Amino acid sequence: PELPEPYNNLAVLYAAAGKYDEAKNALDMAIRAHPGYATAYENLGDLHARMAAQAYEKALQIDSGNKTAQNKLTLIRELMAGQSRQPAGRP
Image 1 (spheres, rainbow, N blue to C red):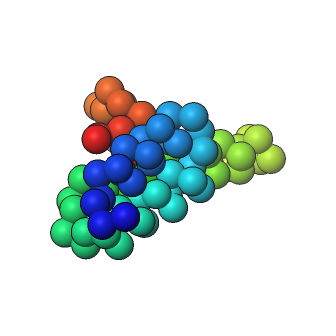
Image 2: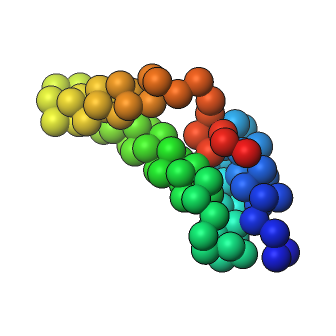
Image 3: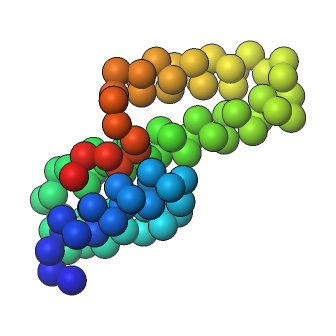
């Protein structure tokens, strides 16, 4: 419980399985265990970006003409395109 790495690694597995709430909880535990663990913060940011993309996609399913949501989704996709790993994928 006092080591952040196992929580971070668990978050990677959860995120890869699309279990974003569980991934967030695991990253919160990693940060609680070691508030200076930068990798967990980076992974948390990646996870939030993926969750935001899901929300924008849902908004577009409801209102396909929503240009603001489309622009935001495009920005997130461009941001994440440079990464070759899943959210919270940095062990």
